[in-house]
Image 1 (cartoon, rainbow, N blue to C red):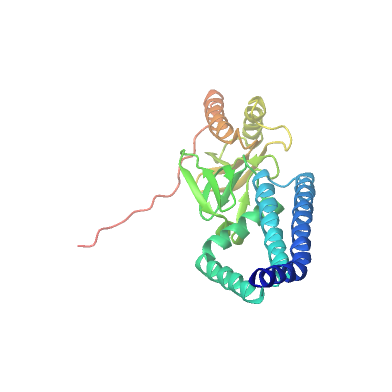
Image 2: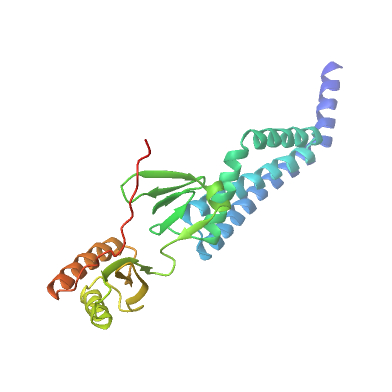
Length: 271
């Protein structure tokens, strides 16, 4: 009698729960296949759009995890498991993690914006957050710079994306600003030709845009000239120092007089 009852209960359970179990297994297997297919399609699309490799991998993984969580909730619902409380717990955990990681999430969002919109790339000379250096690496949470004095600076992407960014490499060239002072009685046309010749003779100076020499001021016994050659980012300092040295040698060789101040300022110490 007991065996018959157990058998009957077992058959009832299989009759009622069996179709749900089989359907849930089919949905789970097919769902995994569809998720893997969708993840691959997404990865190809991200790659085709030229997104950074690290961002491609991260976004693909995030999409895959989100879809799998949705699949598990769907399968649990098909089996008769109450998913309302489960969803509420997941939502509460997500909120708690979000509040605890506000700074990190801000940096993550900033990293995504940088990698998607590309205000700068690896190798660019950048000024951001009061720091200047060459971009070594763009990570999801941080951007790493190498300063001219070979210091490694790690910047939070949240602050970088929300702040002012100066990209010195965007146009492919930089203007080198130099100041040259000569005596007020100097032949201006002659001096400008000498300076331009020295700029054009240096092979690291760009021909386009062409170097410029302009008069900034003429007072206090001297003429102040603005010398503006152009260089690539990599050759900036070579041009800066090379042009400065060559102009000094050329002016001395052509006996161009140095400026002599016509006014002197005095100071008195008060006892």
